[in-house]
Structure formats: C-alpha cells, structure tokens
Length: 214
Image (cartoon, rainbow, N blue to C red; front, side, top):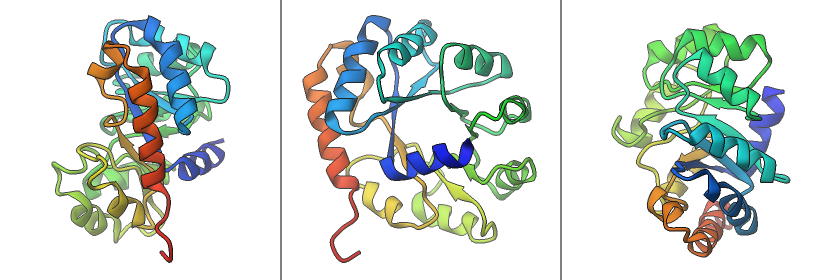
C-alpha cells in the first residue's frame, strides 16, 4: 500500500499543503485542485475545523488523493483515518504515530531532518520521510548531505519551497515529491478565490514537469 501511494506521489511531484478554516471551502477547493491538474491534498490539522474539512474533501474528492498533515498523535491519526485520509504526514518523528500507522498498513511520512531522525524512521521500516523544514534547515545542500549515508531512503522536502526553488529539489533523484502551500495558500482559500488557486495549480504542475533534455 505504501509503495503504491508513494508511486502516486512520485507521479504528482507536488503535494499541496492545505490549511482550511471553513469546511464549506473543502468541496470547491477539491474541484480547483482537480481542474488544475493536481488531484492531491494534505489537509493540515492546524485549525479547529480541519477534521471536518478533511471529511468533506474526501466526500467530494472523486479521484483526489486526500491525506492528513500536521498529525501530532496516534489519536489524531485515528481520527484522520476515520474521516477517510489515505496517508498521514507528521512534522516530526513520533514513534507512536509511526507505529500506529504501520500496524494498520497506512502510509506515513514523518518529519525527519537529522541523521538520527532518518535512522530512527528507517529502523521502523520506513523508506520515505518528510524533510522538514527544508529551507530553514539549509535547503537542498543539507538534504543531499544527510541523504548520502542512507542510500535506500527517499524524501519529501517541505517548508519554504515555492515556484522559485521547486525545480532544483525535484531534480534530486532521492526526492519523491515536494510539499508546499504556495499554489493554494490559506488566505486565498479563506477568500474563496478558487479560480486563482486553479490557475496557480496549473502553473505549478507545468513547472514540476522535467525540463527537456533533463
């Protein structure tokens, strides 16, 4: 299951990080992501109604791949799965969250940005982790350095990634996909500016395509 989902993320190349204040925005946001060509959403548990928003997005999703992000406990992971999340993303490496997801054969991508954290994730059978926060930790240069000893590990860098630095990350062959919110930032969602989001998603998808001759 994890392998299949990781393959899907690898094809998408971008995982939109979504922060929703009003669950009523979930359905039109799902439509904007699909129409923009990026049928994926990591709904962050950062607002009081994020669980309801995730549930509504799953219901409206169609072929949208919906996961839960900013998961801080096994209890939150359980709530997310009950709401229909297909994968779990955590900001850090929490053994309880990882073990809960592994026991249920649910893809989980914990945050890991040091050799110790990456090694701990690997020891629990994971082969893909979220490199977070990517840019504040030193960016692609640091990612390549910490990835070097872990030849069987892959990464989803997130944090400070946008249209201006997406391509270099995706060019690194150990990167599965990049997480980011620049194509659907919280203020745009709150304002109901879904046409703008759709258009920005289209630009992001085009930007993520491999360069000719690469």
